[in-house]
Structures are given as structure tokens and as C-alpha cells.
Image (cartoon, rainbow, N blue to C red):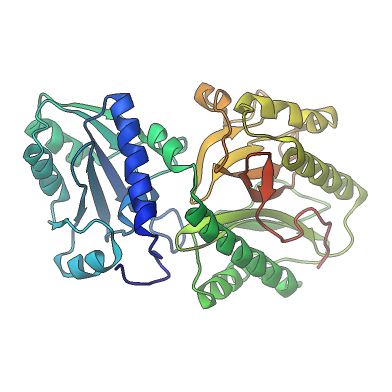
Length: 403
């Protein structure tokens, strides 16, 4: 029995068998003999940054982690700290834990042990493949190539993430718990907002509330601007000591989670009465956000999301990323844009993506002025059911609020 904990809450034995079975079947279909799944550094919070590896291992090592997952044999977990091996065995369903400071050597040794000298081996990066399309460190890849010169290595990160993104009932239960904690954190931050409060202090409030309730966060964007002079439509990834003042709008992107599963709120609120321009912009965003949740259905494609952007375009705004995969970090698909000059374009594979039950997504309406100076957003996390979308967050993200 795996040790109970709130960092990596153990799933049932049935759940791990389901994951391994689905992945093995998909590997056979793709002609893959083995996967090397890498984990490294966090995104910007107290998360592990190793979601693709921990999906199978339920554990993350210090610095680097590997999971070697052959199509037929049992997987192995590779970590760098020998003194952590007992902790790994207490938490991970993978009991074959191998340790070595040079992880590339232990991974290479396992591949040889499996007789994969001429194998078809898939490489999977830490996560967020469409933002960071890298797999393993250069030095590690060179070692694999040198030790197995006749093996074929290929990047299958997005393929893997598409499999991982369809959530089971046990996973959705954790995501629902994350949603409740996210709602609480944002409500606490809203009520703490007052003139003179720094952006960094607002982030610390979120961290304190999340940690108090055994939660975590993987990153956060937060800024405020005077409504009379907003000069950038996107909040800071690392909040600064700039302060919130009367007449400001506040934008926050807040992923808060439990057990390394997250929901994300994209909220906008005001200090004082919003101007007519911002009231109209907010009400438009809220109406579009509500419409997407009401009308987007499983079976529709990523390209179908474009039609929901029409009200934003008709009002003279650009927008980005109306729907993106979400449950741990951003994942495919990333779709819904209204302006050809926006710097981030959806890939064709995302436009062809077919929405399925069990997929968690962030739904966001984000009008931006064409001069790229003003903007706000309204967003929350939803899960596809058999019939449509179910919103997981209860925080009133579509309500125009003034602190």
C-alpha cells in the first residue's frame, strides 16, 4: 500500500493499471518499443515541473527524473539521490527504483537490459510541449545515441500528452478539490486587495492560503494598471513591488492545485468603479466565456472554436487562446484566435484536435485592443462530459467586481 500524502496522493491500483494499459496499447499502435519520459525543473511555483514523468511514477526526483516504460515489461523509475530511494518506494507505484548521479547511464543501462539496441524509442519531455518543444538534455541524448547507435529515437511528447490529457474519474476528483482551493485563494486575494498593496504581496497571500490547505501552485501572473493609462495587456509572470491603487484594474492568472493537479482562474477585477470602456470590455468577455461553456461540445474540433471569437472581432479586438488543455500545465490543444499578427499561432494538429469526454480545458475570453495596450480576461477550468462542458471553478469570474 502506498503511503498517504498530499504531494502525490496515491491513486487506486486499478487507476495505475488503467494508465499503463492505455499507454501500452497506444505504443503498440504507434510502433514504439519503449518510452523514455523525462522530468526536470518547475515552471515557477512549488510544483515539480515533471508532470509527464510523475503521471506514471507518482514521484519526482530532485533535479532530474526518468521513467523508462517498455511496451511489454515493467517500468523503471530513475532518480539521482540514493538517500531518496525509500521515499520513492513509499510513494511510487513503480517499485523498481534505480539510482545514479549520472541518470543517463542508468537509463542507458536499462535500455540495453531490455534488448533495445535496434528499438524504436520515444522521447517525452517534462511537459508543455507546444511552449517548450524539448525532450531530454543534450548530454543525455548523446549518451543514449552512443550506447545504442542503431536505435531510433523520436520526439513523441505531444502524442503522450494527448493520451495523458484524458482524465479518469479519480483524477477529476482531485481536480475538483483543486478547483475549490483555487476559488478560496482568489476570493481571499480579492478581499485583501487595497490601495498600497504590492503585486508581490498579493501573490504571497495566494501562496499562504494554498499551503495552509495542503495545496500548491505551479506559477502565477499578476499585475495592475490605472484604467486611465493601461500600457500592456498581460500581467507579470513574477509579480513586482508595484502597488495596486484606486482606479486600477487587476489581472491575475492563478493556477492553484492539490496533489499536483490544478485548475486555473483568469480573473479581472477593479479598485473603484470601472470606466465605461472597461465595463463594456468586461461584459463582452464574460458573455463570450459563458457562450463557449454553453455551446462547445465533445466531437467538435479545435478549428470550431474560431466561431466563438466573432463577437470579439466584431467589437474591434484581437484575442488569443480561447480554449487550451489544462489540468497540470497548458497542454494541447491551444486554439481560438482572431488576429493574424498575434505572436502565438495554433498548430495545425491543434486545429484538427477532436474534443473528447474527460479532457480538462481552460476556457478564456481575452479581448485585446489592436494597439496591444489594453486588455482584460475572463477564464476558468472546465471538463468535457458526454454532453458538453462542466465548469469546475465556482468563483464568480464572470461577475464584474470592484474591491
